[in-house]
Image (cartoon, rainbow, N blue to C red):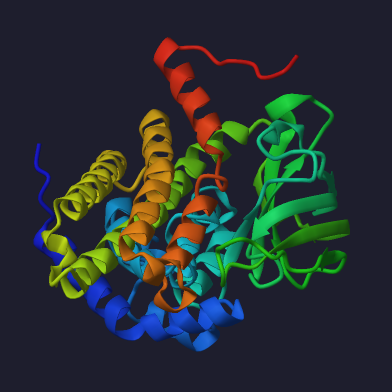
Length: 386
């Protein structure tokens, strides 16, 4: 078992790190202040350097590399901020993967190259007002009408809503209860009948738009069908890539906090010496480093095992759950070590703390991941219903 990166992976990591650390800190500050997402000019830069298509197929303009390579680069972006890293997450781990794997060839040939080139962002629409953790209770309905699909319903907590140009929408195709009636459809932002609610004001995730989406007899071509009723398990299989991307973004937030506090404790002096010379500080640094590295290894194991395919669901759930809890602990320790500077908005650590909590809510809450992990251990599902 070899834990070393290849020469190409090390070169990719260094390229991503150099770009992120030299080019993106000012952009991260702007996003933090304004809440505006990464703009078109920056997306073009990301695309020109290949960061939006690392694990997309070569025929779609991507590099055709394994998911692990994408996560290696993604971590470097997330170290700077969630806002600057989110487009890489959406393209390399998010709904673009679903469109490429399951979409009609004509749809994939249109959407994926545009995403890789930075011309299109794609968001995933799963949750609804009464269907979040209980996703199989969703009620947004899709009806196949000849060569079109008609969609009616409401989506909530859609990251990218109103800003992204395309949406992978989970829908119910028939009245069969539970997962068996659920599939997915691709919808372009400018489709008639699709409207957006006001932007949510969130605790963190500045630069990641979120809003309700309303579908009022929205009609899309039949070839926008991604998965029909009965294909829910295919969607969730691909969603394991997104779970590893979620874990990687959480890892990046924590790794960035560790890098920041390491520099701070060696520069900051109290009682006549750098505070890194105090044993209590050393213990916290060691704890932060152990937590970060343990999550990195778990994510990389799952990604390496998947190659260019699907991650093991148990490994993905464990990696996400561990990373979601770890990032909250590590960023909080970083803020404590920096004292007043950690609590002040000017220095960025408090933003890392706020951002750290979002990943354990998005993509399947922490406790739900634990229930899924337990189900895998005993070999059967646990019903949460009365």
